[in-house]
Amino acid sequence: MTDMSWMPWVVGGVMVLSFLYMKVWPFVRTIIRAFRGPRFKSKSKLSVEQYKKLSIGSLYALQQGGYLNTLSLDIKDKLPTILGEWWGINNAHDARETLDDLCRKGYDYYFPFVYEAFLLNDENAQDDIFQQNMESQEDYEKAVGQLQNLKEVYEELIAYEVITSKEDIARYGVIGWDAGRINFVARACCDMKYISEMEAWNYIDKAYELAHSSFTSWHDMAMSYVIGRAIWGGTNAHNLGMKGMADDLLSNPKSPWVQIKW
Image (cartoon, rainbow, N blue to C red; front, side, top):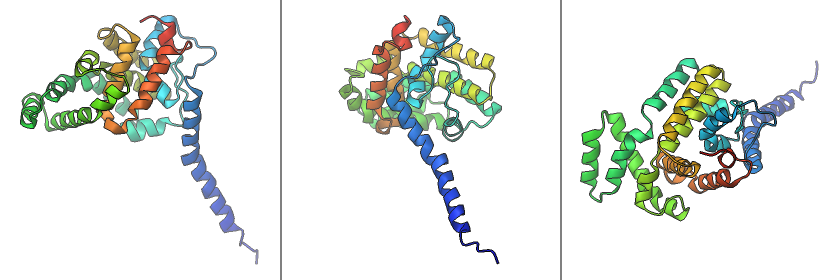
């Protein structure tokens, strides 16, 4: 009989290597990309106007280690997790439905009511605002959650110099967050072949129009993105790190936010 005592070692080794490749390497690659800073493709074919539009989503792309100057993010190893697990996007139908929803009802839909409630100390009065203005139970629960997060992160946002007062929250708003998400998700869905390049650019155009109708500088859009993300994730959203990335894009000579006028 053939001695098969080596077989468990081989199987075990394959399982370990598979685990390292599937679980550990993507994490290590993300860390490497983060320390490397903004990524730029050496020979981008984008026009200046296209690059400007693409740059609405630079903060999200930087966070995930994607290219800033090409339609492709070049992070296909991460997209099944980002789109499939985080966004629930697994096919073309999911992609278009999610992107259309982001364009139709982003965080800015809730923001006026969340901010109005934030200025009040009476919880019953806060609840009345949501009861009177939210169209569904789902919207009501989202608004309540966003208010709770805003309360939690307010002092953080001041400490990290995102804002200096409550009034700054209203001035910046959350449209930067909405526009950045539309931009990034469109690029990611295009990379996964869920939507065409033409469709991706249509969504990128919408994000650009949304941002440019609301802000007068890259700085204001960036602070809006950080605020919106903080309202989304609360104190677990790594707000100091996001502010640092925003500052980098606003000061790095290679950044589109430095090279291209608003």
